[in-house]
Amino acid sequence: QVQLVESGGGLVQAGGSLRLSCAASRSIVGINVMGWYRQAPGKQRELVASITSADTINYADSVEGRFTITRDNTKNTEYLQMNSLKPDDTAVYYCNAIVVRSIKYDYWGQGTQVTVSS
Image: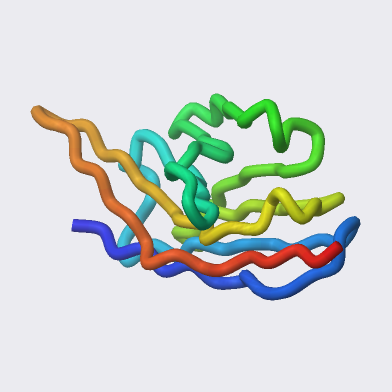
């Protein structure tokens, strides 16, 4: 079991920055993939960025070059640095962790609201 707690959301003007954090309840060394998803009102949840235990990183086209995902194994925490924010980035952001053993385990945080004003 892994509990994930996000923080760092808030209200920011367009062009501004925020850093989201996702603290895990245990070591993240054994977590195969950690990621950030977002869901805007009336839209499906979408992948924003992911990072594997081998530090392979993937970004959605819409955030490439503006967002940076990192993971700090010493702090059991994942981060999402968001720069040059746009109103279209407004959404609830969710932390995700995938652990693959004999089966796949999928864990989610409770979400943190990010609102970008124009």
